[in-house]
Length: 116
Image 1 (cartoon, rainbow, N blue to C red):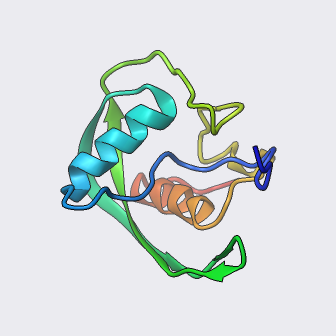
Image 2 (cartoon, helix red, strand yellow):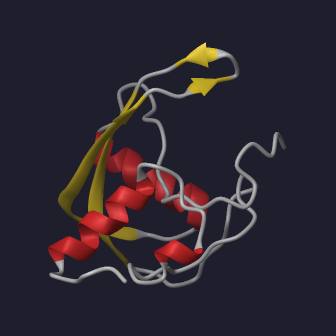
């Protein structure tokens, strides 16, 4: 509703609920945002950033994991208006939020791929 990131792309994820195991939270967040069920693989990237959200300084530390979809039908949450399956070579055609762009680059490097 605020339109703060309209036209920008990011990877699914989000905050943990109190007492929630972080892998359970990742599965829940991906399901809530995309409708996909996932199999979680190895950690890929750790990011830290300090955004100002609604005038309040925040600190976010996130662990990004390699994940495999177990379903293939995407059903976006109301928070999102579009989705793309993006390859590392195509990522530069989209406005991908940081640090997600770095996560995709790290994924490409893990495959031994060079970005165009």
